[in-house]
Image (cartoon, rainbow, N blue to C red; front, side):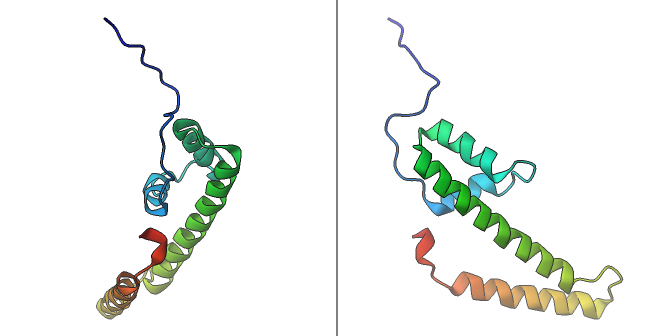
Length: 108
């Protein structure tokens, strides 16, 4: 007896948590927000309204990612000294601690 396996979207799906969405978006630098949202909607059988909502969330994630990258580059100059590196590491450590200590309800 063979089972009929379909490659279509799953019929049983829970809402995608922002933390899961963030992981799916994190390393897709070469794809547009719309393309990522379309792929996820197709894979998980999301309705158009949820796809649009995820596209906007992805855009927000990418804006935050750009902001973080620009802060890192701004605090670590190309012609750096040992003091620059120490200052950079201290700044990054302090910023990371603040972010980690904030108990965000978005990812609960």
